[in-house]
Length: 281
DNA sequence: TCCTCCCTGTTC
DNA sequence: GAACAGGGAGGA
Image (cartoon, rainbow, N blue to C red):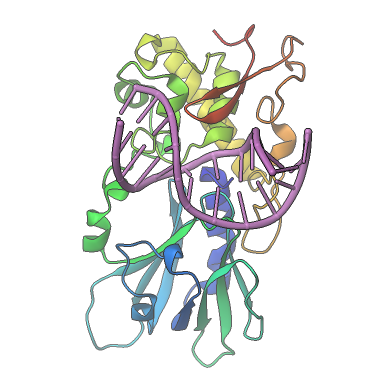
């Protein structure tokens, strides 16, 4: 389930492959894999990749005109991997797979062209070719919250208003960006906070502990190239290893690493939720 | 604010 | 052959 650390890892591993490469042809194999607000992918032809970065769970390729003519409006290509999306490069001869949704052919000037694949088994992921004006029309983008690794506790406290369950707030991308089910459960456990606590009931030290846990878990996962449950791979096809460090996610019924009591598994907001009733209040 | 749906492979 | 995995859109 690609969340912030996985998107960060894909962006980092993709960059050296495609920096300074120019988009040529593109083939969209499943219409619904293109965001409805997106420009046609053919409009990327002739654009050069100048940067690959991440915002929340989104992977963003910044593009600019490779020639001297035509418009200077910056464009970008965004990937949202959702659960099973994968972005990777392959040789010019690689055939489309069963779950390939889009193929871009790209090349560095005067070098052999190759391909940028977007595969997605469950087809929830989307690509979005955009100008800044188009992105502004996308409500999700407009309302995307701040990066959790760049905020302080007072900022988080301000954003955690209202009476919702804290886990629902953490996973709300307009509150903070990039947190999904795995890192919400893991950070709440580390901070000793019950996932159903109302956000407005959290005291200042608890918010500080929560942010510290969140940032610690995200940084640790990034340093281990993310978590691979089954589908996730980086741009080189490698798995991450943070799944070996999970303390609660996917461990319902197993003993708590802190107190030994069996971890409780419930559903919260339609999502599987695992926590320790002893350690999380 | 909460629920259902989208989608497909895996597990029970 | 049903349950489950789950981010976000859209509706109740």
